[in-house]
Image 1 (spheres, helix red, strand yellow):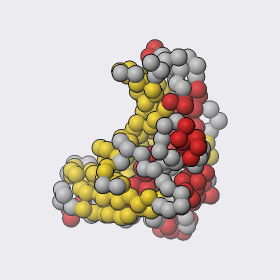
Image 2: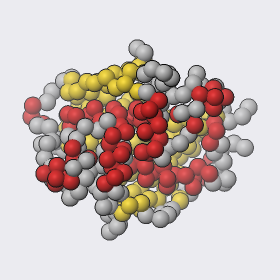
Image 3: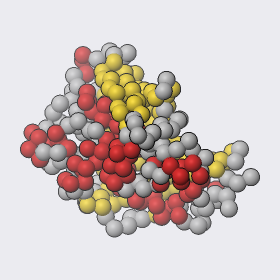
Image 4: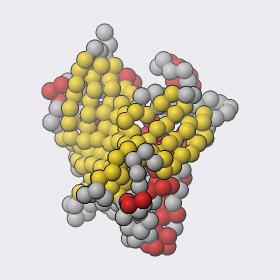
Length: 141
Length: 148
């Protein structure tokens, strides 16, 4: 595919992309519709509080998808061949207002034989990591 | 009722195949802020070397979560969905997923680990195209709180 990152130009430790992601209730409703995940903890405060949450939280899969989009700004579409994460903390999303997460993508390892780069992805909200061991493998040229 | 650890090895599906559409790819790309025009314009997708609109990295969850549903509600597995937290997720793409793909999914209960009032239930969804070739493997773990 075209648009693959140039492997020879990469070094471990390079920050290849960083972006702030603003999340509102509108964002979550949109993601619910697009993904088919209609768990009410992602839109209904009364329900969320009844199960012990501080209020509505973002879908973990929204956060993962938004992080993948930041990787894609650098990697190009269709070039992330493997992406995994653990969900370590929820992102509470206020109403009104927004929650702003910061996504940072750094080269964690390079595989000469496969011509792939492992991108270590950090997503921080309120000074804490909300994803852990978030790693994308990107096919390079 | 606790999660039944003997459910490891059970499989579900394939159900009715999932048809990947341009409209759904655009909708999902907008929802996660995927930047590329190759998710939106057929011309841009073809210029980038794809046969049609290419799906964003995590789009396969739309197909995988539908396919996981019968496993999650199977009384023989015993997951109480009101006590579930998503613990981890992984996508391995064997080739890019594109509009026009007709995808079948089979879900396997890969592992169940129980400790300290939590059951970790791992499922693996194997997504294949209309010719039976592998497209994506989606692995997901749910943490289920057990009543004391």
